[in-house]
Image (cartoon, rainbow, N blue to C red):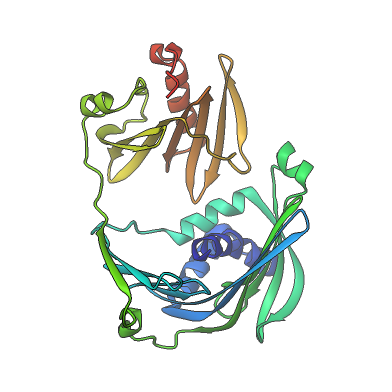
Length: 347
């Protein structure tokens, strides 16, 4: 839920200021980035309410987080704590603690200004007024995609947010997808209270069973090595926008087989994920393109272009920080390849 909230705030921040001050996208992006930098830590209570076909479910989670990678949450059944290198998951009913040593990975540096600038291009925002949430002054915002799909129009998909005026953080979020809705509300929220690092250490309760695990990164493979581990033909695009193949990852879970191809160029990455036996959800606000009878779905999310292709139980996903037309060319080179005509085996 934390990631969802961060995504939505960056989606609407720029448009909010645009409606109030008529600033250009670049200035908006700069302001939003500066505001985000002022948030060092945050704590409060998150109330998540879901409603599906009239059945309501409410969950309450106390939380705290500190940049760049510390997190704590406590709910009815679990306590989760991470100091950035170790994560503890305490199952209260079982009185069992899972201690996980997190892998050392290079964390990507997000360009929040660029993200907001991209989001401004795809959404219209309506300022509905001001209200208080948990005693804090907020803007009330409605977010509407500029290019609404048939799917979003039919289900009457809407988003409504209450944005904190001081820190530009979403303190309340309402998402409606036809007969399904979710509301996330942050209560008793406090920013920059100076939470000590020691808060993000966990001592197992007396008598609790402790299970230690280590998460290891998958092994980097060549194309030839990856092909030997999966039961479908790996398709490599003829056109890659100048990106060069670096390595592949393979993962298997039950009947699902996945290979992830990583291409690099000037420190940037193009990722092509090919899967058998697993179907992902639709891409929001996507455009559909027909290539030789095959549908390509393309959308822009988080400043990146995503493209999805399906053929039976075989699926290809392409992700890169490239212009939409470049990613479409990569997708076309896959669909037009000889390997695309090969029947993918059922696993």
